[in-house]
Length: 203
Image 1 (cartoon, rainbow, N blue to C red):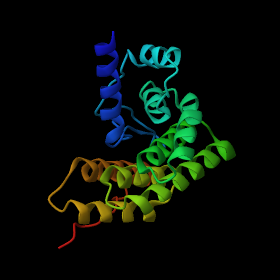
Image 2 (cartoon, one colour):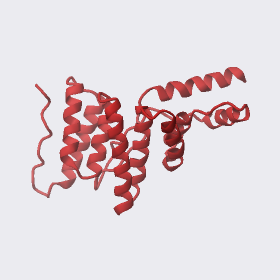
Image 3 (cartoon, rainbow, N blue to C red):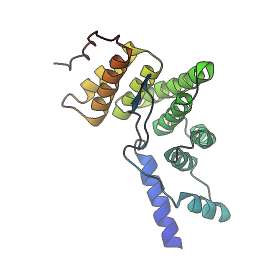
Image 4 (cartoon, rainbow, N blue to C red):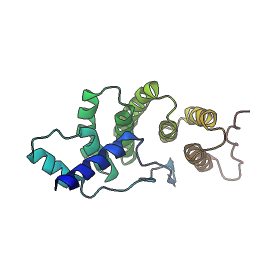
């Protein structure tokens, strides 16, 4: 049992050490609508591990719990755990990215002022994370897609330019945001008109 628990804890720590294993690149009639879990999957034993740790009186890693809930697309349930994790470590960019992603996904299912409020919260968390980790490519991809959801094409273009500078030879994040921008432009261009080209890569 101890060996199983150690393996489970190790897996959870390895997961939260890197960037979140998800993205948002499905495109709907209104531009970018959202996707989920491009690079990861659910750890089915995580809740059992959490319960076992609680019974033993050990501290639960709130970031790991919140991350697991995000992977299950239980974004509202993830927020309290992620906020507790942020209170403990306010300058953890990974926690900030998870919080931004959760609010972004919650907002995508709403309309009007509630949607706009969630997007503003998501943007605030992303901007905080960028101050800590300005070279995080996944963060620039997510921020660009959020700008598209907020109908801010110019800011999304700026995020793509940053990705072009961070990975001039190309990378998944740059390609994904570029495709999202093209789809967004195509969804907003009148029939018969030619969509503008995306910004050229830096020389």
